[in-house]
Amino acid sequence: MDVTIGYNRGGFGTTSGNDRMAELCYHEFTHAAHYNKVGNTSYGNFVQAEINEMISNFNGAFSPYGRGNTGNSPIIALGESWAYHIGHFFTNRKYGAQSEAFVEQQITYTNNNPVNGLNSNLNLLEDFSSSRTADPFNWIPQGLFYDLMDQRNDRLVTGNFIYPDDLVNSYTNQQFFNALDADVNNLPAYRARLLSENANNQAANVTTLFAFYRY
Image 1 (cartoon, helix red, strand yellow):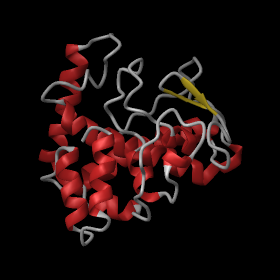
Image 2: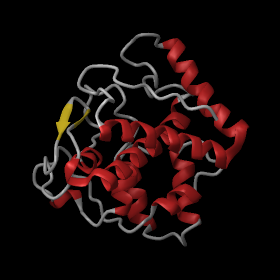
Image 3: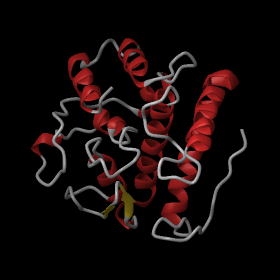
């Protein structure tokens, strides 16, 4: 699939910085890998859903993903949450403590803020909240995948905006990718596939974590 990368577009989120450019590339290449796995029909449904929302919300605050309450929303929530996770996860692996600040949900995340010991990319994922109504895309659970893999229980971390009871750990990006099958087009179906492919590992706590993110 063709991938278009915007460069140095201005504002705080400019992609001219190395790590910001890297995050954008990782994000878009994650979409490309998703397409390569599921094929034209399944991925075409995802692309069409985003096109529908871009048209419906042209130049508005809810472009390009929409309000999260239409028939387009379930597949967008799945595809974009996965791409945001991988984008920031691998940018953190490459740049670590050299990462610049990143902005999400109108919050500036830096190294060790708000969680000491996490660099800006992982702080962004760890602190993501579906309760921040000022964020028009709070329904896309960017922090879900990191919560499934990390060893930290957010409820015990002082300073987080939210306190999910995150008792899930040790899932891997490979397991996440394996569950992105062509017939999976929403997060509840994805949760079921992830559990079925991994012997229902930590099933009750996985279900609780998805429910926290409203899925």
